Length: 71
Image 1: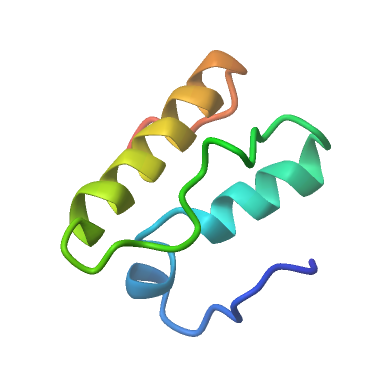
Image 2 (image 1 turned 180 degrees about the horizontal axis):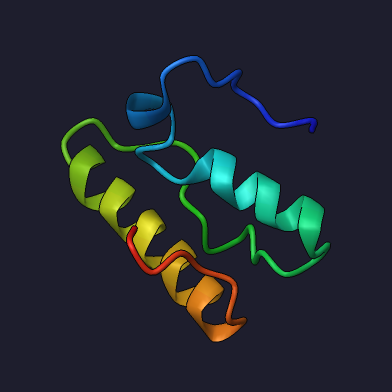
């Protein structure tokens, strides 16, 4: 599907939401505002930045009614 990095472990590879952002951008081109997505994490704030990216992705998907209820 053209996403990077390669996903080998679902939990650890999808924890920051970048792969899901890329897949969502393939499904609906131009829907992801890449300026707001944090791609390089600060070492001290990494956990909070990953949670912020994941929440932004979930809100974007809920707005478009394209989400899984059990996530």
